[in-house]
Image (cartoon, rainbow, N blue to C red; front, side):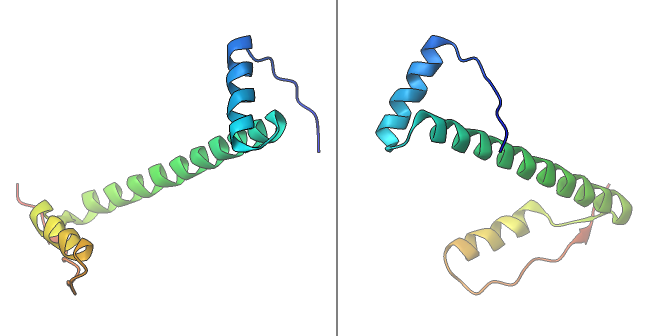
Length: 94
């Protein structure tokens, strides 16, 4: 483990101390957890962006997508717990 120094404005330091106390943690562990969560969220965002780019490239390549009305019906059925069939991609018009 290495040491990194960060300078916190007094107001933020007080907020961290208060939040850590409410959570039953030390300020140190609270800060470490917050940094780890932020790093994980950024990693997830990068993965999400890459997946979106790949899907958009496939859409442009094939010209196929799932119409929103079909997807909405599918999702509403899933939420309701109904046995629904996944909609098929169709060639876009226009």
